[in-house]
Amino acid sequence: MPDQRDPHAPAWDPFAEAEAEARAMVLDPRWPGLSVPAKAQALAARILVTPDGARWLYGAHGRWHVQDPSDGRWHLAPPPRGCPATRVPQPALAVIPPLIPSGPDCVPATGSVQGFIGPDVPEALTEHIRVLLRANGRRSCETFPLTAFADVFASDVPGTVAAIWGAVMWSAYAPAFDGNERLITIFGEYLGRPLPGDEWVRWLPATPLLSLATLFAERVRADQHRAALRLVALMADTAHALAADPRFLPRADALVAILDPLLRRPDLDDRAALLGDHAVLQAWLARCPARFDRALLGERAPGEAFRHALYDLTETLAFAPAPLPLTAAFLADLPDPGSRMPAWLDHRLRAHLKPAPSDQAWGSASFPAAPTRIAPVSDPTTGSWHPEPAEQTGAWHPHTGPQAGAQTGAWQPEPDERTGAWDPRTEDSGATGRSWAAAAPSGTGAASPSGTGATERSGSGAAEWSGSGATVRPAPPYRKPPAEIEALEPPDRATAAAILGAAYATALAWCRLVEEEPGRFAGPAAMAERIVHERDDPHVNH
Image (cartoon, rainbow, N blue to C red; front, side, top):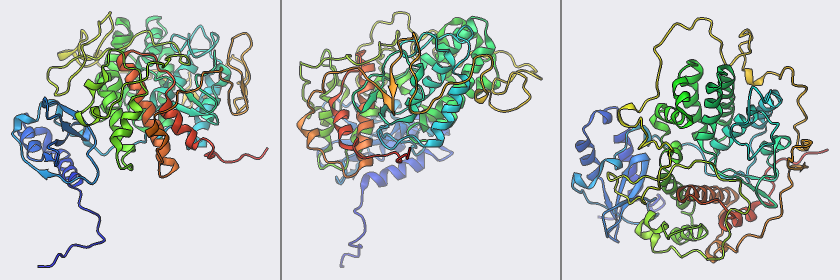
């Protein structure tokens, strides 16, 4: 019988078919009601095997996992494109519980991994943030002290500015902003020092959610509840605006989901705040819906956050004939004290990893480290190896903290009737019903101009800003990128920007995992140089 297939039809992809089938099964309303063994059996029946003998499973977080044939460990890894595969059912015991999707974690992902060097943040979004900033940039420093981000802003800047900045930076997938970025320019007059970066890009460090929790918790402990809730409302208003941009969307939505219950019930986190900043962080993480688990991995499990960022990076390189050597080339640019990186990689990627040069200098253009880092904790239930946990010097960890286990939720007071209670989202009088964060500041003077040419704060040691970006300190040139990256030719500007963002996010995630200061990464910089001369903002006629 002659072949009846359409010669113009796209090639059959066994991974795409298996993924669609597994996703439909997991998103079925009956999935949560199944037992763990039943779920494991259903997933094991859909395992694919490639010609090299590797086993592939579509599982937790709606992503693919590959099994290391040497030791049976499962690793996050996007499947190879155009590779044949055969469905070979396996025993249910092959699927360990951490690989089983919850259901919400397999909802099709939204958002973007693009770096902010292109395109610019939409003007309407920037203007929204500008309004918040101008209305709250002259608040009293006594009422709103700078209890977080003091390494970023001048000493006379109120915590309201830090709340807006923190929400922007935490929500960004990869905080790499180009010199024309208006969203960063509007903060220029408040800075206490130049932003780290080079001639074109502000390579900013990752912001921990703990910094936002600190701003709130400190005000509660100071018996300044109204100020604490104003800061939370500012963070929420900022996140609401940021969700309009796909590069902010997943984390911005997660931040809104964390903060909105607190705005509806102002005493929700009071007891946690009295226990400390980490207790507030725990309460925030505990009440975040499961569909935002991936956005919060950096706070809960830095090792898994690195593996997911690496997954994103490999996916952005899927257009290349051999994406794994390219991914390994980006990894070779990262510091690796104790040669710990190979243990975090799957066997295919590990074979391409080259040792990093010994002449790298790290931290020369970074902000100081956050005072507390959450160290990775080994988990015997997972199928992937985790490094030994660092010593826990009083820092709370979501898996080992004093309230883990049965006490996973935030402390919640008994409900009471709150008729006529002050609403932190409205003006003090509660009469206007509009966002308090957009109100003009009272008693603090007129807001300063916040256009592209912000002025230096006198006596504060702030960065000098001119034109469309900050004047950055001289920095040594980037180390030459690996030859594989130099030869890389992305098919278009959007792909190059996606590689830039994913590579920078991977670098930040790795540095957080190994507790190294982010330095100057040659791989993302090489991608920036490819697209920096292509304007992504409209020409403005003066």
